[in-house]
Image (cartoon, rainbow, N blue to C red; front, side, top):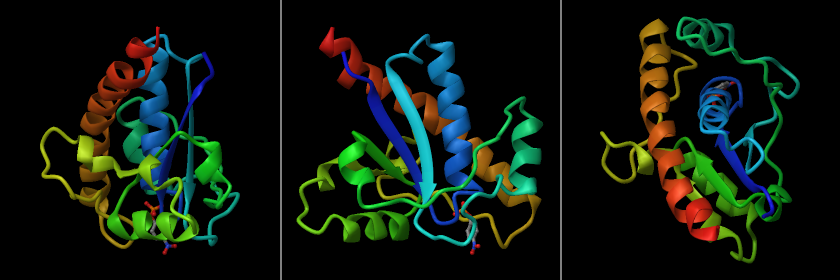
Length: 164
Ligand code: 4NP
């Protein structure tokens, strides 16, 4: 079976999506699925290309034993064909991804990450913590932790167990 390629996308790729990347990768590793699922993240903006995640996000993640060493990169139109599943952190990110899908042929791959949050309504967003305080980073951590688990469960049932 070819690897299933999963991409998380936010604005800067230094707070929310690299956290989702790190937590989901940890969950994939624990589930023994590292050979089956490939995980990546990116940002729709270009300001932080090459940067490590924001120090505030890394500090919050480290307090839960999660290391973040991703280097930011920008989402590209070619990622729409390259990746199988693309999860946007907020509705702006999703709109910007879909804007790059000129003929709409990959739109079915794009969803909001929090559509898999067991505690949220459909259409909920991961709030951008960049201009706020430490509480915002802790909140993002909680959202991403529980959503990642539910998302992996969904992906296993839909794409992996059914494909065996
Ligand atoms: P992220 O947060 O999209 O979760 O990585 C942000 C990071 C940087 C900026 C905005 C949001 N910025 O405006 O530079």
